[in-house]
Image: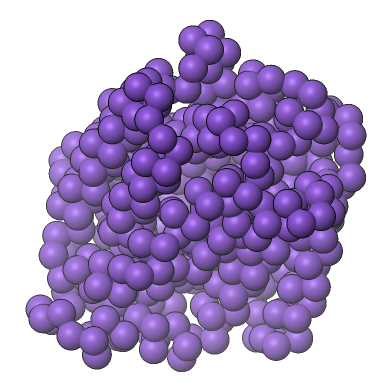
Length: 417
């Protein structure tokens, strides 16, 4: 072996104080938000028995992000990103606390949807602040490792959250205690983020102009690799997401209750957590582009298997594999986007990226609910899996540079210029 090649350190990020502080708050916040998603899905479907209403939850989450992403991204590039993170985490706690009050007092479903939209207003600044802050908390060499561990923490939270929510709903026979506990956990990341000491980064010029807000969007269209990766995520999840219909599958197809629903929602994150640990212990990928494409195609195939399954254990197995493949695509994208983005643009590019993510996840939930109402849940999920595979083929043909992408440098030199 070449003596000049440094051995891969799978714990590089965990040796840095800033990252440990960030991660310790992030895990509590992520678990809390994951519990909220499960509790809301159960509560609204239990009230309405209408898959379309589950889709409206996705619209309520996504609409504020679509409308406010550009000014929020510019704000993240101008002010201290830690403060944006602290304020939005506090907003999460307040809104989720109000949700608990509405549910416990048997308030209307439409009031709950309005609060979901307020939660979306907090998310619009929270996501870009987290994405833009993380590269400044760790060394360049440790950044890919930080992404792997952060992805693993998210998957752990997304695994634990639904299970805890299902157990609490089953114990209390109500969803409002889940929301009350979640409100308490959301403030942790705001506190620990303010204790970090990020390195100085180049700031955007002050002044909220349309031209400045659009810089992130223009950069995205110049960087074809980033555009390809985000486009793939947008359309693949938009047509292939099945998570919004989990309450329907639990109640109508598998005939199980809240406890099993929690495990169904958690199943993809079991596979994703295992894959994240594997990625953290391996050196950076040598074939990042092909790995991204094949992982999303596999995601679509597993979605089809889940959609056709009538056995709870087969469905859960398909979801576990699906989650592991999704973790690969998340890992590649989360390294690629900041690596190809200048420091002073990371908030705005992350904001544009958040629009793509919200459109794919939440509007995908709306699309799944609509197709389930018009046809049936099985047709909705299976057609989505087929659509995901077709999206991969389209992106592979439209962006040949993604097929040729090999290793991604921790931070590209031209991104710092």
